[in-house]
Length: 176
Image (cartoon, rainbow, N blue to C red; front, side):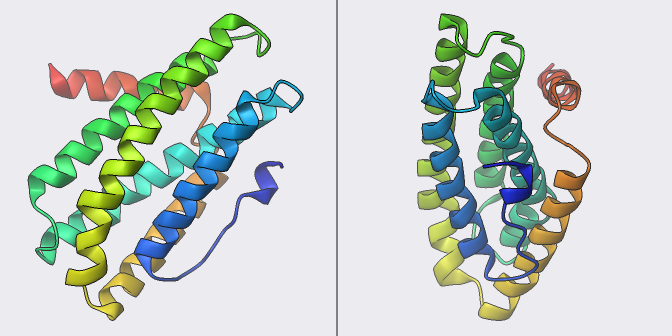
């Protein structure tokens, strides 16, 4: 699997687009744990899709769901905080040079924990209300915006170690 294998939908129900990415994250995490795989390439792909997905959600999806009263602002803020935790774990993974090392395995485990927790909560607390409380046209409009921003960010190599470091530093500055 390579960067060009990342699906690039242009539209769709935003809930389904997000769920599709969640399953992709899980497949990539399984592959990056496999020592027979191109772990460096998979790590790069995972980094790009994680960052593009999260940034697109924060820019369009969460505000759109708050605006429609499907979720509360605190729910969006909580999910954004979890994105920051994922980015911190992701940065730890990106900074490990030897993909065959114990440090790499430890970094994969840390990312897996942060990501698994977020996926569970987001699917339960954000996406379930979006399924039932948001009309089809709004989900399609949010899906189109999400997909376009996600593709734009993927094209910009948003998962580079330098960009992830910038995102982590910006989140820490916000918390101070």
